[in-house]
Image (cartoon, rainbow, N blue to C red; front, top):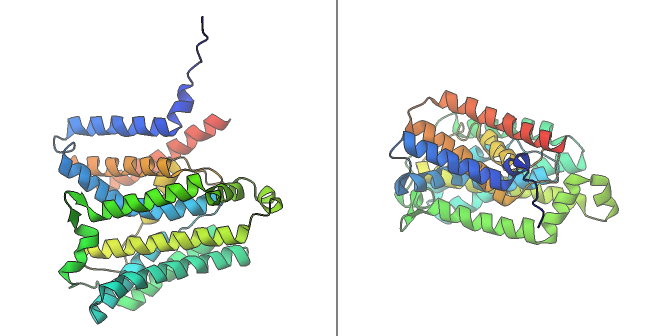
Length: 315
């Protein structure tokens, strides 16, 4: 007779399989409470809603793997979006309207990295301060006013479709696939995890720590720049207060997906599932007509529960 392995229920529900089960259960619950939830149109709408969060989560995951954090992503989205709208209105060039926000995001990511990596200021403090500075620059740049009246053909990136699939969803899938290959299948992902798991051991292994941390912040800024472009394209307008609180949605997705704030742990697949869970909850609660205030309570509770389960797992 073969021996049966004991099933560790706690381990299952703290893994990506557990996240998938939670996602399925939530989908079933909302499909029963709202007839329009489990429709093709709504599911595609969810994918479009979470696409920006997932794109920015790629950069956040890179930063967290290196045992750092980036609280400036929402502000970078706003400033990149403002830059995108201003360039588009002043030049009419869609190419420049895409390139400039990418440059803005990348430069701001590198500035974050310089203070963290070269001046050894904790990333929490640096990116918190940068969040306020960047948001302030956006407010000054726009004088606090929304920038509207953008060309309709620019809406393709944020509101367009290829067949029935949103363009933003397809772009998100491509970026996630590329990030999966880099983080899960190359030495670069191994090095980032090694830096976050044990900085001293990574240093003794001759891993270029400063280079990888700088690259992580650069990717975070770049992904936020892409988020700003898509947001502006979707709304055909931009304003300095856009994406307020987005850093919390991004952190929720990454942490719920299994990333450890102490660094060294986290996967793209887990982040995808975490973002989808948050997206399904938001959409389901909207379908039920519940206030957005309750959504904040639910998301905060989910983060605490996820961290609690993992802490119990390792104790």
